[in-house]
Image (cartoon, rainbow, N blue to C red; front, side):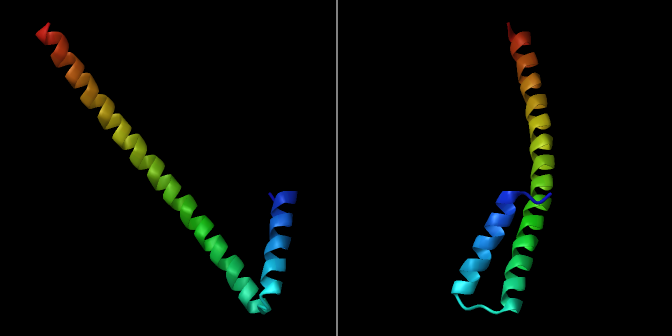
Length: 74
């Protein structure tokens, strides 16, 4: 969904690019790069969440084993 802030940011980007005397193909590559980066970060976020959940699960398992051993010692 495109919001007003997206439009304003896009206009600001175009003004910046225009002030640097860049051509239309250069403008397109800038937006393509931004989209590639955005999509890459979204993919990595999914992988990071998976890894974090996996590590949290194993950490909780290790904690419960340690707690069991501590209660056995008492």
